[in-house]
Length: 440
Image 1: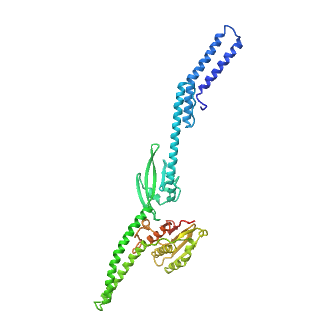
Image 2: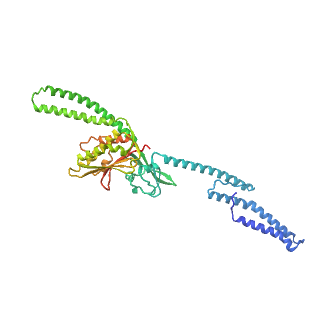
Image 3: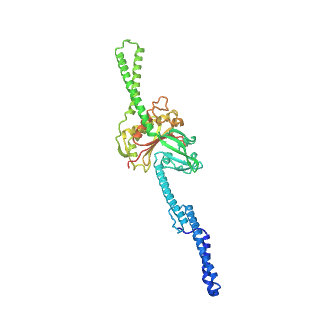
């Protein structure tokens, strides 16, 4: 049993010691006579009465006080010893049983909380929790990865992540699905849980990118196959008939009819080429990769990119940072070359939209550990168009087919690279950023 208890215990002990001293000292001081025996007997009787009162009253109360101290300190591992008094020992037994149960419950709660912490940290969903103010007090590693920063201690309005703009207008028990400019698709939910009698809000960020990509790919592949089959079969018959008419020319030397037939044949050929372009996206071959650095990959195509830009009156520079030629990446050179060419071609066409007299410049930077950034000074991408980039058949060009970025996204996704296309609000430059996962 722990030391402590009521202050009155010490008073009983002091009184007991004084009575013992008086009982011993009295005969010595006055002498042992027949007239003083009753005083000594009274002292002994008072001592016995004091001892009985201590055992019957003070000791049980002191035992209860010690138990209260243990509960107050939440020391559930301590136990009390029996005191030899029946009623007090019953209290001791009940107390020890209560402490044992509290210890088991406390251990169970700790284990459950630890398991919950591990579950939250390992969750594939981003989880953020607010305190009783607007500041974020907890987030898991996935939330940090998605947001690109540590939000703890900040309000949602202070975050730089584009997802913060989605969270701000969300009310309790509302959800929203958003596609970012890096093709990532997220479902954001604003929920709450009870804590100390109050509803505390928390946020869930669920990545739907893989599911959406699979659904989109399955949809546009089916559409393209059906379109290709029907259009190509029809165009084959039409071109065959037009070729026959052009050979026999039953209209004689009528130039108008000749030009009309040739024009129809040309449009039929153009439509077949249009459908074939879509089919190429569906029929991208499997990757045949080789290990190399990004700088090694860019070296052979640098001259071609510079020449392609120069023909359109645009200057293009390629730079490699000092520490970007060490990390090796698994790259399919043929497919990735086509993707980079498409990216630069889109940048050139974007610059040309500013007019023939516009001074165009493109910077291709190879950065550590394994990244490529293509920066152009074109007119940029609007906020509305930014959310639809890389989606099937979407194009910002009036005559665009929506194939270029779709083709690029498919190749980069197969390389397991992360990528984004955004126009900076600070310098108004448009950047296509690619980061490859290093092989070692």
